[in-house]
Image 1 (tube, rainbow, N blue to C red):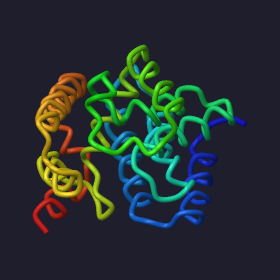
Image 2 (spheres, one colour):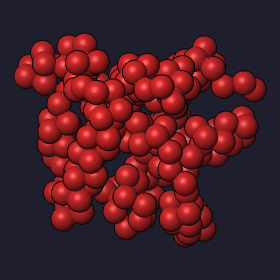
Image 3 (cartoon, helix red, strand yellow):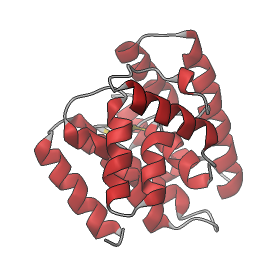
Image 4 (tube, rainbow, N blue to C red):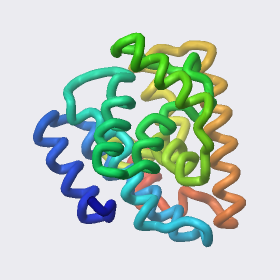
Length: 199
């Protein structure tokens, strides 16, 4: 099955029926942010970036879970032949390529954990991986927001571990990378970011 915007939108819609929740709206805003930023990057396809954003949390179709949604999403995409989307399903949670930097629970089998540990360590990230990592931190279910607002949102839900600060530093580094690529602020490409951040 070919991965395109229409297919990705359809899969997200179906996944949202199987497991309704804020994650669906969040995924849509991540996808829009990915598309808007990629449209200013010569070496990225806005449509593919949009697809990867839509599908990054697709593993949540299987039900409420913590880190299990990463491997569920990986398998979902691999079954359809979407290898890069499958990688993004895991890589979006590991801006630092070390499974110990996770902020969630490993609610999966030991075999799946060990697979994911190897995968994260050996994955070759490109700017699609980095873009989804960034945009995941720019999107609430209600719209775009400043990174710092999302940082606090995640810290409240998962707790403030020491590794959280290292993750934040990495996201800010990725933000700087993309702002150099687009020669400007990413926030100018996110409609409603001011209103949503301060509402």
